[in-house]
Length: 315
Image 1 (tube, rainbow, N blue to C red):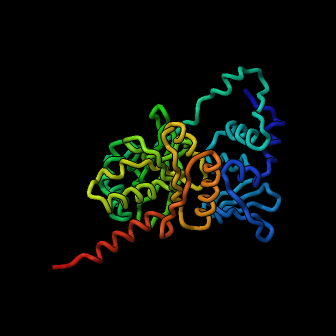
Image 2 (cartoon, rainbow, N blue to C red):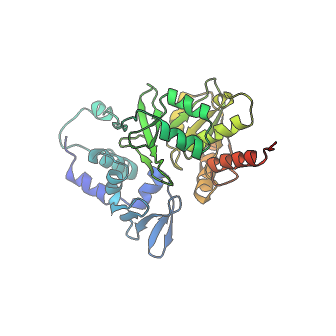
Image 3 (tube, helix red, strand yellow):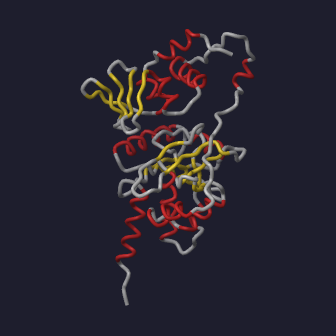
């Protein structure tokens, strides 16, 4: 089923800023002839509101379709559908006749998970030795298939759907001071990295990254004698500063009444946390902010570990 060329042409001319604001929750400021993203300062949109370039990723293009294909790794047809629905409120009309129900029930994006390594040495070294994540938490998440090391030595964080099928995964580099990170091809951000409580809990803690969620749980264990204390609270990683993953979690856990936003303590994190707290308060949830003392919860965790080490009495 081929999409009409007029629909494709219309999608190519969609306002990039308007799309980013609606689809990703990004906001922009006009700075000297271009628009800079407040949440990701290295993302710039030309004053024509069509050309864009993401400097930290080294990728750019013309129009929203280029962004979805190059950055989000979407298939072209899916990208056209997303743009027409987000910007124009309609779905693309194929040239040939089709069943509407069949079209709406197209298969979801296919997640491509990297091949597992035979060992977890780099994963443990990075998460426990460098990031100070509690080893019990690391082991538990590996056992639950939410965490593993790929053959390149990256840490892979996996999110599942309601059928316990992997639908989202993101990578974190482990080599030296490597800052590599990214989502796996075919990832659906509606299904975030989730550390669900093993008993019903009315509270959900929300973070920007999986490492921050694990760090928050490690801090809880840091002050408790029970190594399983962290299992009594829900934690969710958004893999960014948009709330795409929250609705799915709430649909699966209708006991949740309180949302605690623990995003990064920087301008983008604070702005996003306030925006989301207001949004879900209007929906009837109890909401509050619990930002880290440092930039993020992993920095807080490492600070606690350093304090504990320095306070040890040497006999």
